[in-house]
Amino acid sequence: MEELTDAELERRVLAGLHDEIALFGSCSPTARVIRRSGLTASVSPATPERSLFNSVYADDPDELPGMLDELEATYAAAGVSAWTVWVPAEHPAGTGILAERG
Image 1 (cartoon, rainbow, N blue to C red):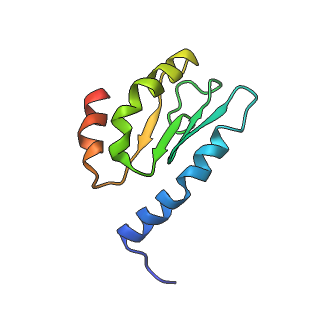
Image 2 (cartoon, one colour):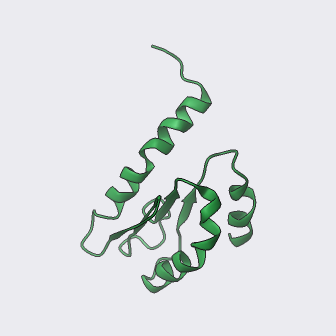
Image 3 (tube, one colour):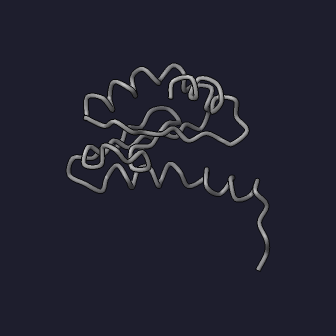
């Protein structure tokens, strides 16, 4: 069995995130999927404290700052208190704008 590098493992995870998030957003009668140019988000009011099921991924993390207010309002309106945004490990959005916003 070949040993995968951390970079290859991350590439594979990120490659499947749109589909995984869409699955989470379609698994309950109250859940929904949001799709915007290169962005997929799942909103799952049935699991308001589970950020895994309330997740966001954008192909280009540099576009996230312009979408965060809308996403925050969407999750708040759905009663979701925990949601997460996936970004590549080395991308500055993770330690920048996202970390600042909690």
